Image 1 (spheres, rainbow, N blue to C red):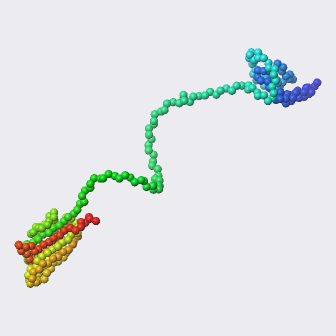
Image 2 (cartoon, rainbow, N blue to C red):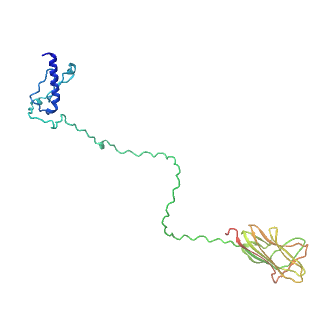
Image 3 (cartoon, rainbow, N blue to C red):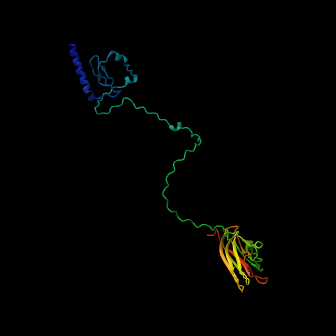
Length: 290
């Protein structure tokens, strides 16, 4: 037989082996049959199976490590039972369990609290939210302490004169000698003037008795200005004359009565038994009152 015919025969054998190997199944490890399939020279036999491998190069054969058989493996009895292609294959290597590490053993103790950091910058002011619902009515509170009395302002005076007065070459201030009411001493009896210490609106009234055959000519003054006049013409009969008004005074204003000077002969009558001349005034409304 020539070399070409021998190569063709070997190729056909290999084709049959690879085709029917899955059907015939594999023999489990450790249960090899003593009868091993003979193959052509130059082909290697797979251990534990009926498969053969093609010839290898010389370099590949030198690199392979020869398998070592333990003495116990040689002593194992050969298995003679058959296996079907659908039987489960026994794994050649058992799975190695993965080592487990207890993390709680590696966890250390809790460290100390660190220092507090610096305060950050304030953020932008947000928009005003919607108004909330009205809450329930609270309980009635206790009675508070009594307050101070409402401060009320007063000012009043009423004075009279029991002596007659005649005009001369200069203006004369009518001075009064009888004091009826002088609240807080706001009317000065020596100067004949009322000094305003409580600013507000005042009411004033002047009453005199005329002299027969003489004029009666007086002014009610505020500071140095004439405000109103009290006048009576010459008459054979003496009569009572009066004048009244309201003034709004500021603090330190002065109100008084002045007799006109001697360009005209005028006078006011009175005696020591009766009081014919009176001047009165009182506060109507304080400036701070509503």
